[in-house]
Length: 319
Figure 1 (cartoon, rainbow, N blue to C red):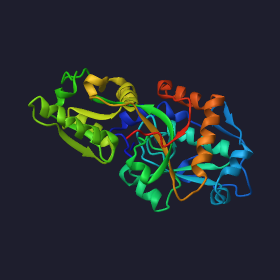
Figure 2 (figure 1 turned 90 degrees about the horizontal axis):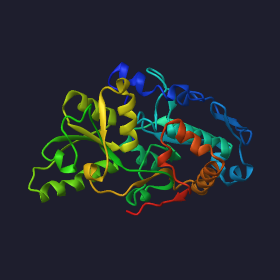
Figure 3 (figure 1 turned 60 degrees about the vertical axis):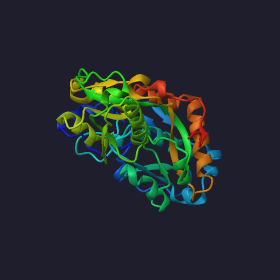
Figure 4 (figure 1 turned 90 degrees about the vertical axis):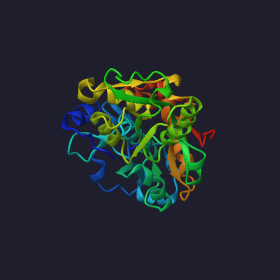
C-alpha cells in the first residue's frame, strides 16, 4: 500500500532481489504508446507472452483507446506488490506491476505506472490525473464512493516484528500500552483503532498508534526500536521478513489471536468513475488472465499463490 525506498542499502537490495528480473521497460520512462490501434502481444514475464483480445479492446472507453494507455497510480515500495527493481532505479516491479502489464497486454494498451503517496491516490484519480489504482488497496465500501473496485486478491493483516519476536506478541492485547506502527490512510490503521476496544475491555492502556506516510518508515521505526511492531498486510510482512537483510532482521506474527478479529479482505484495482466502460473491460481482462493461468503465474513468481481468487468481481467489499 505504499513509496518508500528501504531505509538501508542492504535492505533494499535484498528486498528487491526477486523483482529485479522482471521484464518490461521502465515505467517512469515508458516510450510513447502506439496510437495507431490495438497493441500487439507483450512478454509480461520471462517466457510468458500475453496476446491482446480485440473484443476486450473494443470495450475500452474511446479516450483510453485513443491514448493507448491506462494511467495507473501506485505507492512504491510496498513489496511484494510494488517496489523498485534496484537501488536508484525508477523501474517499478512487483505483483501489481506485472499483473498490470498482463492486463494491458490483454486489452491491447499499456498500463503506465506512476508513484503516488497512498493517502493521495484516490483524490488524484478523482482529479483526473489517473485512470486507475493498483496499490494493494483494500476494497472498502467507503472507498467505493471515489472509485469502482475490480477485486483481484484476498488477504488479511499481520505483524512485522523484530527477529525472534522479543516482545512475545501472541495475542493482540500484548501490544496494549506499547507503540506500534502502521501506514496512514490504510485499512490497517482503522483496524488498529478498532482493536483499541480490546485493550479497554481488559483494563489495559491503549496502544500508542504511530501512523507513517510510508510503510518503509514504519519498518525503520521498528528497526530503531521506536515501535515494537508494524501492522500491515500479512503477505508483505512475510515477504519483508524473509528478504530484508537475508531474513535476519524481522519475524512475523499472524493469526486471529495475534492480529485481532478480521475478515480477509478483498484487494481491488480502483477504477475511475469518469471512464465509463473501463471497469468492466478490466474485470473481463482479469477474468481471462485467471482462466488461462497467467494470473496464477504472476502470484507464483512472488510466492503468494494462496491469496488468489477464482472470480473477478466488482465492488465486493462487505463493509
